Image (cartoon, rainbow, N blue to C red; front, top):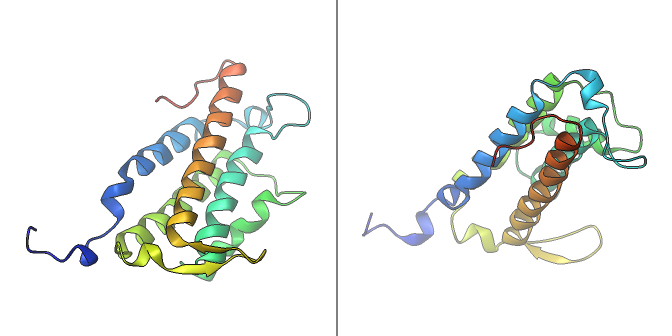
Length: 162
């Protein structure tokens, strides 16, 4: 490895904690009933199902929609954060988390340090790097994962076991 060109290295090892966080999300959501998925922290806040759908949709939107990664089947997750999202059960949410995680993991395994500096333009006209997008999705996962854990705990359900 000492003689390996740094530009040929995968980015995956630098994001290993993210995979563990995804497993925590799946573990927290998979056993929930429809009634539990309908719980929310307060009126006007997202339900548990809507929170997870929001996480999944954002991952799909950034990695597939903005960065062009993955297959067109990922687009099925875009409506999960729409104004009137589909009704999602725990199995749907688990599939969404696992599928979008595979998209992310496959992308990071393929990208090299040089690839992370490639730029793209957002629909609002901002020039961003892939690194910016990756960090944005990580912070989004963490923020809404914390919101999910807090909501679960407020209702006496196990949150993310950090």
